[in-house]
Amino acid sequence: MRDLRRRALESHKTVSRKARSRVVSTAGSNTNSAMASPALSRTASRSRQVSDSDDDYLSDGTAWSTNSIDEVLNSEDADIPEDVWKSELNTRIEQITNLKRSSTEGRADSLNAYAHILMARYAKNEVELHVQELLASMLRSVKQEATEREAVNALKALAVTVLTLDSGDIYDDMADQIKRSIQSSGCIGIKTNAIYTLGLAASFAGAGDDEILDVMAFFLEIIESDGASIDAQDDADVVIAALEQWGLLATHIEDLEDETEAAAEAFVEQLESADSGVQVAAGENIALLFEKSYTAAEDDDNDEDAEEVDQGDPEHPEYIPDGPRFIKRYQVYRRPDKLVQLLDELARISTRRISKKDRKTLHSSFADIRNSVEKPTRGPGYSTALDLDTGRAKGAGTLKIRINSGVVVRIDKWWKLMRVNALKRALQGGFTRHYDQNETVSSCLPFTMSERRTTRK
Image (cartoon, rainbow, N blue to C red):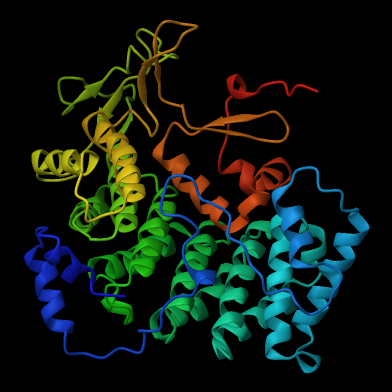
């Protein structure tokens, strides 16, 4: 991949002194991370909606073909008997854990099939019986890196295993090896997938707040250095992964005041990236920081002492007069005027140097981000358009997910969007089934009773 900062210069974008100094300091160094990331290991999407990625590596003649797994994964009504998919899953578990009777390609195929089955079906009981052997074998595949494909599939299998188990005591078993892969692997695809897996493991496998903050600091260093800190200079996939997983982990920390200043500086700098995916991921993290800088007023809060008080938005469809007040607790970015100007430019960008699709993504994403920076109690998808039924502004919550059971989850907060994107990236088309059956997934995206709808028969 061509140097992102050089591309920025070619398109006449302003590049900060920090960015220029990093380019100069690394221009003469040769890294072992120049290998291009294959389609398998690229991020699923760089826009709001995380799209499902296809895999075509199941070719060993076992019970399920690629097409049949994709059918289960992407269809709510796929008619696969329970005993069939459980039998296939147990076969794959045996192939993964029995190293003496497996080849490199065979393990890669089995890891891929195992991960797809866990995405499509909630199989906690089956996995729990073999958890230690599975973790040991997957981590061995990651460590040995016999092939990039086997290691990447093992990382994806680890990620979906974490979400399936709902275990608070396996993070320590995984973290060290995954961190080593991020730092020292020679393959960009492995680094990228390891970042995603580490973020999920820290979120759902038992890391405490201190460890989560340490991982966030690790990811922030990757972002600040444009990937150079892990020998992946200016690789967009690596930077996007670090940005997205930093945002996911931030949703688990109640008070981010101490982390906000350095993070905001890094994210604002990444708004000048030549890659639209990097820009959107950085912008969404900025919106999250502003959202978290406001908290509900407490009994002992004095409006006169507060820097800013938000009574709520009267145009919001659920606005309650004299309802909750939100108080700004701290400053997110030292130059809010500069930030708003930059967000305005991205929301209206019209240069032909970027594709029409990327322009559309930037316009829609940064209109929301700018809205939240100016008024942090407004979440993603806030709309000032009038609702035909109420005659009032639609407000937040225009982004929605319909779950199989008839539940409708409104994505009206940035922290919800971060979690939805992370879960969809890991579970792909199986997300809604897991929301119905997997408490790990449903508990991190709660819905209000007003969001429940009756599904029509």
